[in-house]
Image 1 (spheres, protein in one colour):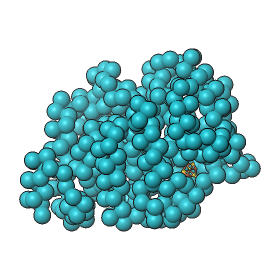
Image 2 (spheres, rainbow, N blue to C red):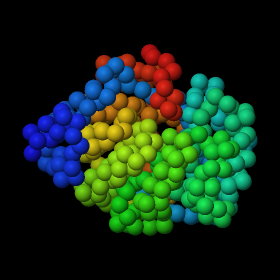
Image 3 (cartoon, helix red, strand yellow):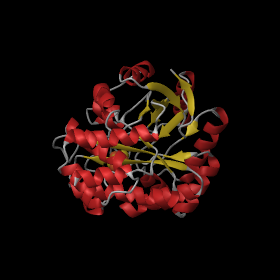
Image 4 (cartoon, protein in one colour):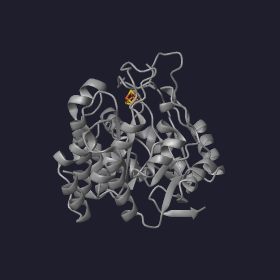
Length: 354
Ligand code: SF4
């Protein structure tokens, strides 16, 4: 099987699901790494490893979805439930700008009262006050929730948000794009087809998005493979994904509980992502869940990007995973592994090399 796969990759022929499953479950660990590294070298021969200076602003932790894997959400009447006001959000963005940041990743829970007007006004104000910051915000589940609350279609919701200033959409909330898994880990959340529909609509409107996968909870290896092919198929139709970001479920403080995936499992899935998603340019290493050293190893298992420096991160931190890195440390990860660190914007345009 390995020889067939090597030949197909060398000839640029896509693998089928069975071959991908074999790589994930049976191939030698270093072999799969070598294949992914070869593709990474081909796609990024300049040897750059990129990152973006960004900030996560979690505007509310009140969420109706109550996903079983999530340690971040609160019921509306909880003592520590919050909703940030515009002024507080502006203050956080001003700090981001002072750090030379270019990307605002605003995500929250599915709040029972925040309709589209709240976001339109906020985005319009941000665009006016902080024109250098790209509003890269709201996951597909939030877009659909806002549309429902506002009694408008998802497409109209996205169009209005875009007009107000939303420039691109993060692919969060994908978890695993297989409904049987979603029913178990996030029964109240949108199904995979809705996630895909938001992404395709955003792409049709000219917005670029990312795609993610959270694995290591209740999915099977077949589900992981299916997820990757679903992302690949969407990309084949729209070409709108800038990057793919696999990350591991963090069980602490969650209803689901259990263990987190091992580093080896993480690297295997990362490498498989690089191999299957031959039509997605960038694969991101998740230092937030893996830490700096593992992120460095990930650069030899297919990753070419270290994501955001994240001036603030609350969601994964709520699940007891609190890696944090300064821009200098992110540069050091790339340098230490023999790459050229480069700061990029949301669209992966290079702003500065180090
Ligand atoms: S993962 Fe998102 S949608 Fe699910 S409960 Fe947490 S905040 Fe809500």
